Amino acid sequence: MGVEVGAQAARSRALAVLRIRSRALAVALLPAAVAVVLLVGGSTGHISGGSWPVTSWIVTVIAALVLLAAAGIALVVARARPAVSPTVPIAEASAPDLYRLVRDLADRLDVPPPSAIALTPDCDSWLEDRTHPAHGPPPPEHRDEIAGARGVGGGRPRRAPAAPVLVIGSPFLWWMRVGELRAVLAPVVAGTGPSAHPDIAAARRFVRGLDAAVAVTSEPARGPLARTVLAGVGWVTRLLLRSCRGHAAEMERGVAAAAAERAQAVDYGLRIVAQEQVGLAYAGWDRLLTRVALPAWRMGRWPARLDAGVVAALTELSRRDRLAEGFASRLGERPACDLLEEPGSVDEAASLLAARLFHGGPAEPGPDWAPVDWQEYPDEVVDRTWRTEAARLHRVLDALGVRHPTDPTQPDQGGPTLARVLDHLTAPATPATDDAALSVDRREAYGASGESGTGVSLNETEAGTGTEAGTGTEAEVEVEVEEEVGEDGEPVLGSERTAALAAGLSAELAREEAAAPAVASGPGGGAEQPGPDWSFWDDGMLPLFPLQPPRSGRELLADHVTAMVCCAAMDTAGAAPGLDWLDGPALLVDGVRAVDLGPRVLTLVEDGDPEPLRDWLRHLGVRPEKPVRLV
Image 1: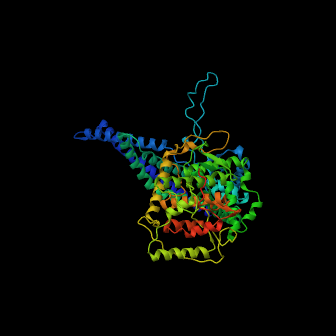
Image 2 (image 1 turned 135 degrees about the vertical axis):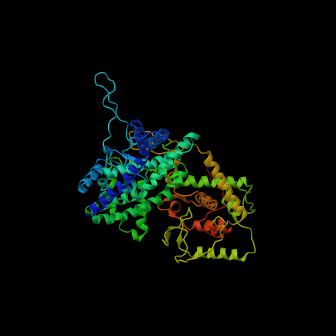
Image 3 (image 1 turned 90 degrees about the vertical axis):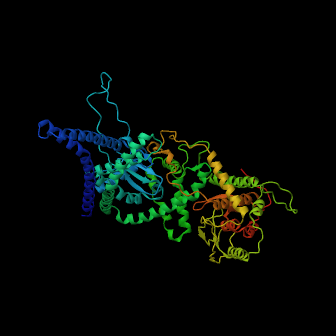
């Protein structure tokens, strides 16, 4: 009953959209109809004398102009290429088990199966119509079998109606089990039933054509005449799109309601459990991209097994978080990625597409854009990132004319040392008792707190594990500090020298990004391997979904100081770079993750107080006066 109600509501809304299309056509034909009436009336003598001849010719000219404009608008709408989501197409030969699962699911739901399957580097699944001629292969040429000439009577072949493409989030295949994936895809596949209705399909094509036409008319870099013509086309298409918006939204709600009601009979109990996995996979995927993949992308490396990394990240989350207990026990069941013949190559293609979408990286690997395995991540990404940022920090200090510290008790090192950074960022002594009290309170909080930072960033994820190096006592102390902020909402830095250093880092990073080579826009090599369908979207819009806004001067300075501290720890205290699946780059001391570094670096940057950081360095045996190795 619910299926029929939802489908009927969707069909009624689709008819409303089609009525708007019919009214637009009627408005375009109305002047022509009036002109025909006037011309026929004049030729038969029913309308004659006075100004009727002149009126009929004026109306005829207006009708011709309106018909010409309508034909132009219809041509733009018909030829405009609708937007297509960037995906990795999966051929049936490379995933026969996955296609068989989807077809069996469609048979159980009594709906047409999807025409194809594609993967997207996101935690979502949907149906996408790709029946537009621009989205399919070119039609084959019909030639005469005897003469070899093209056929003259066949005309243009008609495109058979095709079912939409099923787009699946690639993290689902690696984290979910086969039964969970089937339960999650059930309401999505059920949507092919309402999509096959002619009225709903026609309404969707009309709305997508209007949307694509609006995008065409909004493109810049055209001549004055073309801009004027497209401005009129854009005004008409936007008017029609606004008129259809409400009906189209209600139509899609009706389709979704009908699909959800139809899917109730398929694995209902398992769907409840699978929905929990969807939320967990989304959290792990977002964490993996922002904390692990983004530092590698900034270094010109792209992790080639992002989907496999989701499993490791969520397994680590289940180990740390008691709320996630039991999720890791599912790993003994068959994963959905086993439905692929070559999951490694598919994971690599999805990882490259993720780097392209979220960071704007090149379309194909190269010397400056190479894949990196998880085993090589600490050396290829973490170590190089820290040493590159430390080198940039000292270049800016050299540009500012900052001298190396002169300590009579130490030999003249003359190289890049952590002591040089600490001395420059240390605020000069002032009689402000409030600032002194604030620094004392923070030092006491660090000594009594059991919170653990990331060791390399300003994020805090764990609390009181008691297994990492550098922790104090296990007592938990909550300290609320009211920070002074500037006009832009950023905390005020410790001194003018600190602000100048932050500005210099921002300028230096901007110069490096401007001098970087242009992003390649061609498709990747190796046509045999699965890869993204690059031809359906514009490279000039990359990245389509940036993960984070540009870092502020305070964040850049804190990250560079943290990198310098980590380099000093590696070169003087025997520390090593590591990878934390939830927090990204990590500093390992004796094989254990060092903690509490982020808040101490912030104290130095914002307050100019180096004592908390010096205490941390003394505890780990780091020697700030020793030069470090830079890139």
